[in-house]
Length: 422
Image 1 (tube, rainbow, N blue to C red):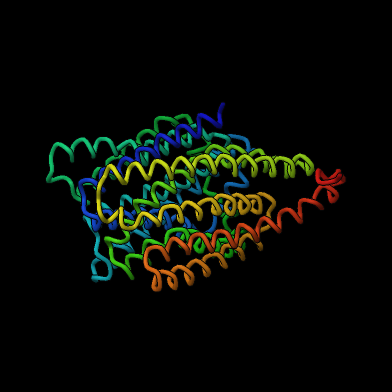
Image 2 (image 1 turned 90 degrees about the vertical axis):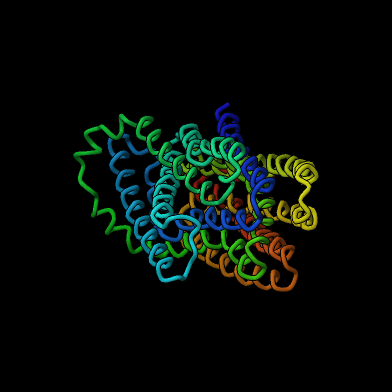
């Protein structure tokens, strides 16, 4: 039941994002949609690119930790995230001041948006690690979707507000409401003695820093690799082409995140506890069971997304979308491979295969950059979509091969019987 509720809550939030994409496709220019896609990409890549690699260790360590220790531990992580966000915002503001980037709204507003989104992203992961998937997805809904119907209603009634500037300001107001909701939901933690009296744990930070830097390279590669496509499209094909791509990508990504929320997220803490408790046979069986559920759930979700997109494109009647529709099924195929690749990457993370996790993510980043640039230059928008399919399928197959080879041996290493034994 919890998995269904978590998936349903995530579906509600992502549905709002898709409705926003439809509204923008109906009333805004594709250039404005392209700018919005770049902002979404920026807030998506910064938590990994500027997060110093700490989340990898924090979220794994905090699982099963007593509440009195977990509260200051999470507080320290979020403080570091806020500082990193402020530095990133200042860097963006400086780049805008020197004419290196063009921001759609006031740099101070963009800076606030970046900081709150970064803190919200890390808080979401911390709550998942603490078995609070429902709270995590409820707050995610407030952060990412609560403001959307408000903007659409106002913009529909007042056509001068159908601009990217008004959209971003409404988004920021939604983030402020999210911050207030977080303080209200977790007021017991924010008012606890451990939150205020426990000193910042510099010792743990010094201990983990050498290892965290290598993880940061992996996080940087993963975050940039997952969001670089729209920047590449914007550079080579124009901002309007990035807007068209984002329309299709937002629908495919919504289907991907629904599948992930309903399968991978609820399983992650359970798998970590099994592995930490030397329950090797149970761990292997649970990983394979979740993988099967993920594939089946993803097939159903992506099939529905394909049918829904056909209807939406006909309804919107925008020539830019109709002429590029063939991009959508290709993106969905790439997202299918991405679900498997990311899940098996999480399995590496749970098993503390840190070196392999880092190397695979760095190679994925390099492959995505080179393949996407090359195919986009040759084939345009369809090339960008093909880049997703080729890279994600390649790495999903590689990670799957490694996992099934290790899974046959893992139970024996722990004194169990392999579930692959005939």
